[in-house]
Amino acid sequence: MSDSRRSGLLTDIPGITVGHAQDLAVRSGVTAILFDRPVVASVDVRGGGPGTRETDLLDPERTVEAIDALVLSGGSAFGLDAAAGVTGWLAEQGRGFPVGGMRVPIVPAAILFDLLNGGDKGWGADPPYRTLGRHAAEAAARDFALGSVGAGTGARTATLKGGLGSASAAVPGTPFQVGALVAVNAFGSAVVGNGPHFWAAPFEVGDEFGGLGLPGPVPEEAHAFPARVAAGSATTLAVVATDARLTKAQCRRLAVAAQDGLARALVPAHTPLDGDLVFAAATGERPLTDPIADTARLGHAAARVLARAIAIGIHAATSLPGVTPTPPGEGRYEGLPPAWRDLYGRP
Image 1 (tube, one colour):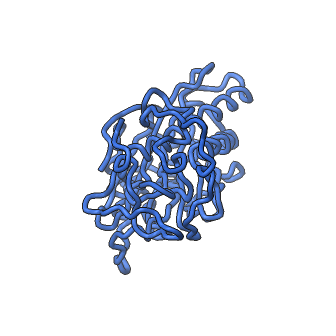
Image 2: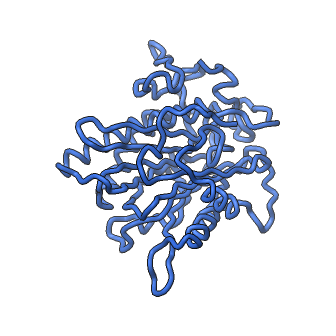
């Protein structure tokens, strides 16, 4: 179900842990990103159909300066409950924003649409996401799985099974690191046409997603608009993080710049049918030397790392146990398409 190979993770940034929980019968799951101490964060939303919780407070003008965790979840609007599970678990640990004699954990969240993938969604008045959120928080660790896990469990793209990817890198010319984590559930495609080559190939490090490069030349049909059109049916959710010391406004610029990575790895991206967004978080371990130049370098590195993470997520994804892949058809969204590995193996 998941790839145990490690090529760099979001948790290479010290002070971050990640946990997953999933329900294979439902074909959905939750990923929780926890911070050892509150961090500065912001968000940039580009897709036309986002679903979020507590993202307004990430605006630089809002009062709360730091957050305790981030949550990415399947389940569309039902998945917003996952943040409540993480919030409750953090409260038990004594975490949160002090309000009188209480502490309130600050846990922004975003959801993706995986309701039509064929899983058992007959949960009635008790969706599973709050429980999954709690379990994801309990499972948080420095090491975590990639592929068809957590928020990427029931994800898909235009042509292939979606998944959960992560990557990291040092930022050239600075002492900083940048990492990315992404749940890829895109309206567009991560691969060029009907072949195995990833749009993100120019940014690949080693052979972390096959080492195939780009086809030459890129076939014209690779630029065609996907056949299926289902409003609100897709969303790619990403988190980029750095050990740099940033303000909320600088985090917002980091998130904006990282969106370029999403557009480099998915074609098309940021459509009215997606809810694409990028959270950015800064743990603040290393101060900036030159606020303008350092912020620009961080953004450039974040875009490259996010592009890699997207391809890694698709490369690592596997078909779910007992699920027969459904090849994409004209205007069809139901079910899950084949995984990249179903079609091309693992070079």
